[in-house]
Length: 186
Image 1 (cartoon, one colour):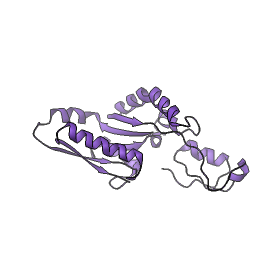
Image 2 (cartoon, one colour; image 1 turned 90 degrees about the vertical axis):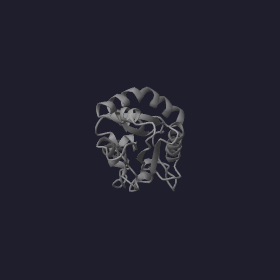
Image 3 (cartoon, one colour; image 1 turned 60 degrees about the vertical axis):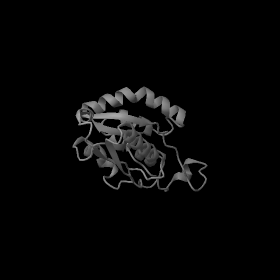
Image 4 (cartoon, one colour; image 1 turned 45 degrees about the horizontal axis):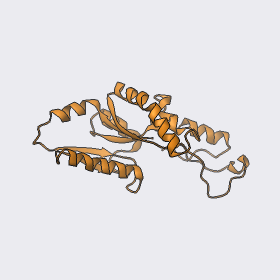
């Protein structure tokens, strides 16, 4: 699940800004331009520009070009950037609720991911508010499955293969399946 974050205080500051003054925000996202999540954020920035009659301009910084994925949340918290997009499972060590959609096969399709998002939204939003962040919106992200270039007919076929992992759950799953050390955490 991808989450767009804004410092809670920024909402009040923006509301009190002069109507004639133009405000510019930087918006880092870890995803490449071609990704649907990035297309959503670009549309969001354009919608904000139109809704504010050009008074708020959001500059997109895609593909980790401004701030790397794991550091985006902290950059928003410290005011280094005004808004950011994060991959929520990266925050799993802080609270297990952030990793719900990273459990393999738990919400395997968009429909299930949407339901999971709907039932976890309030808990996620409350945890972010306690950290001084406001969730603007979240996008459903179906849980991970396995993808392979070769057919996998049994667990034995996974032995020694490399598996991309991005949290403790998927790293443990790879280990239990006999995969070689995980490639990397996202």
